[in-house]
Amino acid sequence: MCHYGGRIFGRHGSINVAKERWITNMEAALQLIGRTIEKTVVPEPGKSILQHAKDNKVDWQHLCTRGTCARCRCLISEGSEHLEEPTKAEHLRLDPEEFDEGYRLGCQAVVKTAGKIVARNKTYF
View 1 (cartoon, rainbow, N blue to C red):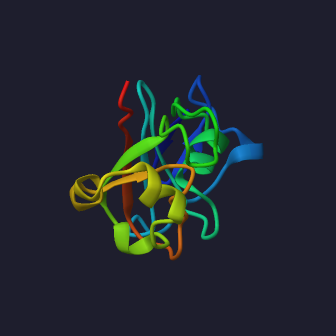
View 2: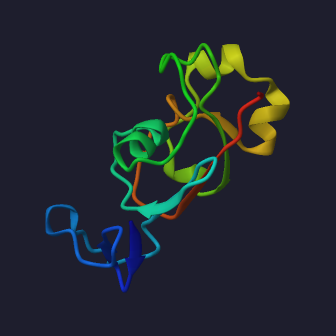
View 3: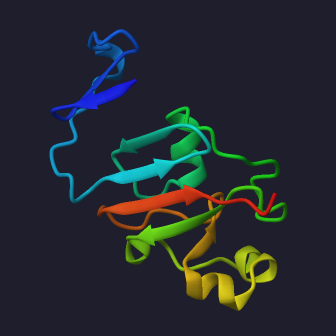
């Protein structure tokens, strides 16, 4: 799937009508960078980074979805102000230095407001 002019196209370049969306404001976009797949999607408040990745078939590592395994750890390089505050699970799993560098757990990092967010899956393994 690819984006062109704000439209999402299927594998062969045709518009997938069922999944067609318009990204009208690139200032309100979530860029998900997985291991081999990268997509820009519309951020949905109340939904985690991991859930956005799963819903959009981005290859984002994860196991538990509860904040204990840290497989979904990601680097938020832009837009952390558009995410909810780190959860207790994140504080138990990540070091203070990781927060300072911009790391969050994808399963716990929930979109709070629309805006430009860039998240890269960066596991320990």
